[in-house]
Structures are given as structure tokens and as C-alpha cells.
Image (cartoon, rainbow, N blue to C red; front, side, top):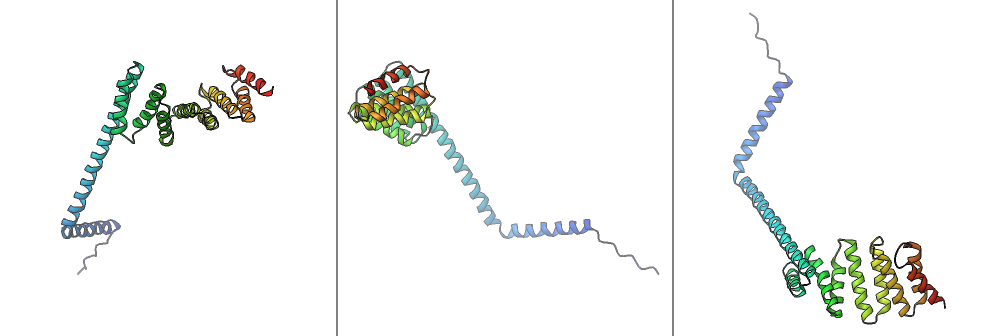
Length: 225
């Protein structure tokens, strides 16, 4: 009588058995930890909802801030400074910390400078400079505005240093040679003739096509007399 042949176990059979075993273990674990897993999944969903709500609120807040900034700019262009100031005050008070609010400080400083409120404008330009990290041109303009406030109260050395910072912040900006020229004039008023000459010489070397080129040459002649 022939003995029944033993079935040869293949790699495929082993893989299938291993899969069945893993599936059974997973099912057992799930049944034993159903509540725990439910809490974890529920927690992930709650966290996801909170993150979505936060991002949605943040996006809405940024849009509202940008809208106020745009309204203020339009009022300034129309020379309605009182209305522009109202929008800027609201922007800064309600949306502090946003990029739009930071730009609002710059616009408010410009309004106060034009209104000859130099002390207030100086503080606003400084706050903008200390917090803003966006457009180099806007930052350079703020340094120049801050320097103009310092110049107005007779702090010529400090004014010159900030005009120089304005030029260095945006050296390709069309106003850059003018910033250097104003730095030179303020160094001159501060009695620092060598520094003044250095500023004018930089204009001659770096900005030959600027309107300040001939002015700088004339100032050097005056300083050498």
C-alpha cells in the first residue's frame, strides 16, 4: 500500500500563513484596544479641526488687514488724510502683528511727518524699522524718513548714519544717491568734513548718471576750500 505523499510547503504558503497570523493578531489587538484607538483617532480629528479653524481664521484676519491697508492707501492718494488715518489707526489696533499693520506704521509715520508731527513720526518710523523684514525699498524709505526726523531736531550725526543705512539697504533704488547726498550734508552740519567728503565721493564713484553727481562734485570743492 502506497503511503500518501506529504504536501510540500512552498514559500507562497508560508507567506499566506504569516499574513493570516498577522491579520488575526491585528484583529485581536483592535478588539482589546477599541476604546483606546477610538480616543486616539478622535483626538487626531479634533486636532485637525482646530488647526483648520486656526488657519482659516488667520487667513480671514490677514485678508481683513490687507483690505484696511488698501482703503488707507486709496484715501491717501485722494488726499483724504483724516479718513486714511482712521483706517490706519484701526489697522494697527485690531491687526497688530500682521504685515499689513507693519506697513500701516510706515504710512502713519508719513502722514505725521507731512503734518509736521516730527516726534510722533520718528517713533513710528523706528517701530517700523525694528519690526519690518519685507521690501528693501520700503525699509530704506523708512530709514530715510527716520533720518529726516532726526535732522529736523538737529541730531545731524545720527541723521547722517540713518541716511547711509537707507542707501546701503537698497543701493539700486533710484533714491539711493539722494540718501548719500543727504548723509553727506548732515555729516557736514555735524562738523565731520571727512565723512561728508566720503559720502559725496561715493556718489561720484557709484552713481555717475544720477542727478546728484554734479551736486556731489560741487560739495567736495566747497569742503576743500
